[in-house]
Image 1 (cartoon, helix red, strand yellow):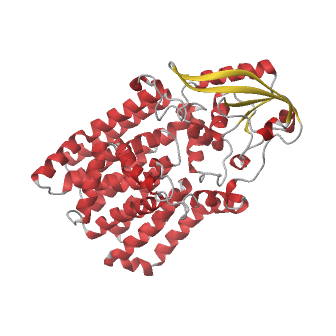
Image 2: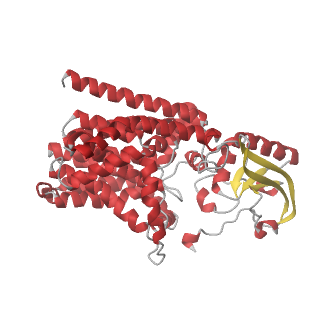
Image 3: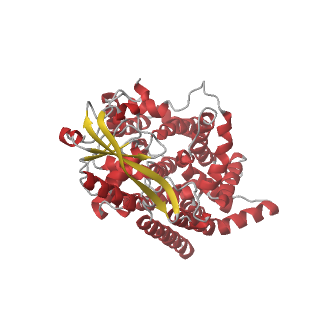
Length: 500
């Protein structure tokens, strides 16, 4: 490594560390989203699986709270730090596949400045460990290519297994790898090697706790996630959402670079066949499926997280390696120069807006319901009402409110979701004594109490209303209903829709 290469690697590492510090500061300021509070509850009862996802997100949160406590910073700490191995892996993958530290540095920075990676590691969801596992998977596949050693397939299996423990969409990596091997003549020999299949067994072994948990719970998580889009539900209007949402999540300039990079790889204008095909299969296998899915149901923007490492490499190819015509070169140069500053500014503006509402003039926006601004103050009002009325347990109608209540109410307060008990099968239920006393039911005033719940109590009285505020904006108003004289089972144990 010469002096220029060493300086480039050092500057890249410093830039990534600076971005990590920025996210840590944002994590300490920003209240939890309802999903994070829900996953935090998972982390208190680790298991092989959960109703919604595999267990990796719960493990990540558990590690963070062991270090920094049950605070928003603690919940997010390890997730944010995972950007460090993610960055190292994508740096090495790009360096091996396309030969050069400039392209490696560009891929690393471009991935980190996307909102998918910046917000995706700040807000702890299954996408955070999935991004890391995907980057590691690209690196070890590059090592298979570079070294020709079969033992690297064990690392491929370990990375794929870690991805599967993060999110079920990692299942698409299996077909992607097989397509890569089939399309590159010199790689087809691996189909006859035991190492490929040993790697598959490693992945299966790591994923086996999730399989076992599903087998013990009527395969409910598999059914829920793999039955989202039904062929008979043809709704092509969702297709129109795909590009605008990814334009935002990638940030506009990285998006342009990525699209131009994919085009250049398709036209064989950069890289060897095996590198081009690997980036394309890791990207298009998932994109093609979600495009089909969008013909039948909405595709959430974050579902595309596993394609972002490959997309960042393609963007770096466009920025560094491809020879463009003068007009295209001007576009590339502009995007390369401004992609990182624009990404950082957009991230900072998003955090300011989510916490204050300042940029929209304190009006509602897309973040207002999911980010728990105002929940600590709201929880204080709910706790005061609970103490005043003598309620022994707090009930909520949905999992998000349940998670927020459990996180922001005093530690040890009895909190439970009245329905959807499948979400809580790994967690200890309230004791019969807690459910036999007075209960406080928390729900938005616009959402009426279910008749089945109301009829199950001798007395139901709205004892208070409490507002969640972001500055002058009322986000939600909650009714606090006191329930007394239970006649039957408090918790609705009906099976989830997937099992009915």
